[in-house]
Amino acid sequence: MAYRRGTVFYLLSGRERTPVFPKSRCVEKVLAREGDIGLNVVDSPTGTIVFMNVTGFRILPFTIVSAAVWLTCVLGAQALNIVNHFSPLNGQRPRRQRTDYLILHTTEGPGKGSLAKVRRLGECHYFVDEIGKVFRIIDRHKVALHAGRSMWNGRTNIDDSAIGIEVAGYHNRNITAAQYAAVKDLVAELQGIYKITDARVLTHSMVAYGAPNQWHKHAHRGRKRCGMLFAKWSVRVKLGLTSQQKHDPDIKAGRLVNADPYLAKVLYGSAQEQERAAQRYAASDANIISPSRSAWDIARDKYKSPEVTYVFPSGKRLQGNAIKDWKTIPPGTRVILFPQHKPTKS
Image 1 (cartoon, rainbow, N blue to C red):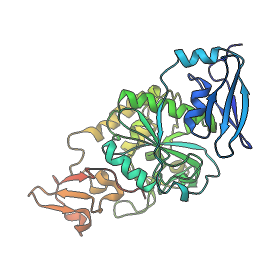
Image 2 (tube, rainbow, N blue to C red):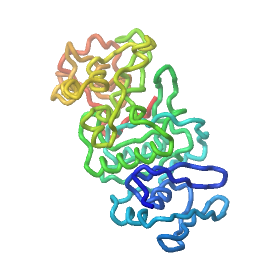
Image 3 (cartoon, rainbow, N blue to C red):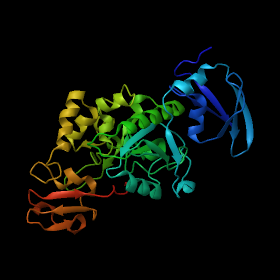
Image 4 (cartoon, one colour):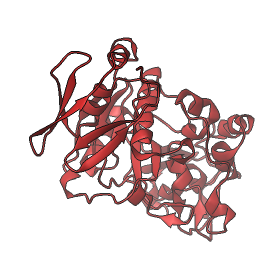
């Protein structure tokens, strides 16, 4: 018999029975990429595929009865380029008790420096660089500190229930074709493993929220624009995602207030509304303070960070932590955000 797209295969590893949805890929490549076990094919296409449990060095047989799987290997898309690049903090992280969401992030900086930073701090499970290479940073079974102060549908600390994927790039710029392909495949495989629907593939900007500050007196949505482009319908289609959230459940329930209506349109609007609202973040004056753009609008909760530089119309420069009176910042002041890499998530 031929295996149809979406057929469920089971990997037996120790006492675990993990479902895998190979979609467009052959079973053996999917399982090997997940890194949970070693793999060795020891027979013909209609024979036995042997999976080795690395930790127990126990070999378990799993018989594939159709050569159609092997044809998928030959004719299917190129396999993910994925390597282990674990954070030195990986061994200290606790095992995650549940996995309900995939959270997509953008690094807001070049890939090389961002990769070094997220590896050092253990800030994601997977990292996708500009050429589509995927790095494992934190074991997918464990907690990675990627969402920071977060809430979705009343549940806080989303790190405890989500896998974080960092993509080298910016919230308001397109990613490369290689990244689209890699993110699409990675998301599809993780969705299959954890039974995560398209609507529960969220962006960091959807789940992050901010504490009260001088601009917003209540806990608010809008703390991050990270991963914003992955909410756009035009982008989600390229990632194989056919549905998404239509509103923010925490704003609707009154748990948070909406501090950025433009961002909300990008995250939850129609395709046309998303494109119009996104223009605000791509405009030439997007990082210049004006009556309609405050320091918070541009730098969000990092407005007073030493990593943010304010260049006044006079040419004077001050770092965020050196500014005492935010009401005196003149219009026309340019804000330079983290030129090398994004800051630690909090």
